[in-house]
Image 1: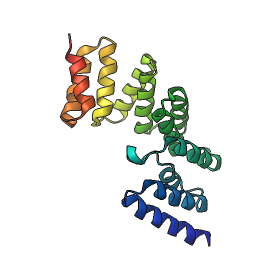
Image 2: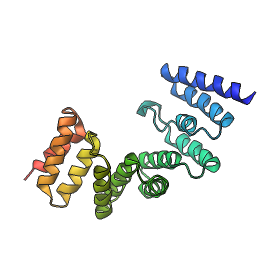
Image 3: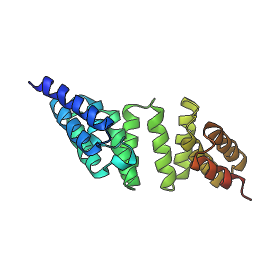
Image 4: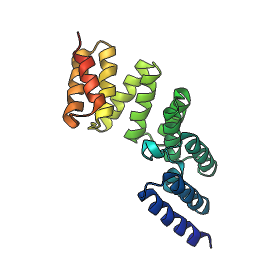
Length: 191
């Protein structure tokens, strides 16, 4: 029966993931997702996009998430995670498109807005990035050192150095050892 097979596959996926065998875990999760095609969380697990870098396979992630979207077209989680896969592969324009579509279906999700801001910033679309950083911060002040560092660097590049320094300091306060926060502070305090 499909439900029992899906449950067993999910269990094997969890066990192999916990053991650090990410490739095998992805296979088990994919089998579970195919048995439970409307379970978005299982599709995301099967994609590897949220795995540690050593276990991530972005081409697999793209293929799995496209397959999942064919069955769950309006899922902001799938759209967002496909954006993450594209972003990780350096395909910023495609990442931006998927982030924007995810944001359209779930405008209150701060994580989507923050990822969109980062992709727009990386692609040189500074005014659009600034609008997204402002929206993400207004929705919920961030304690993520990476988000704060990226936002600080954008403000610094726009000549808003004191605001950039303030955000870089927040990033360092959140995690004094974070390399992004350290780099942001260095760049925001350079003359």
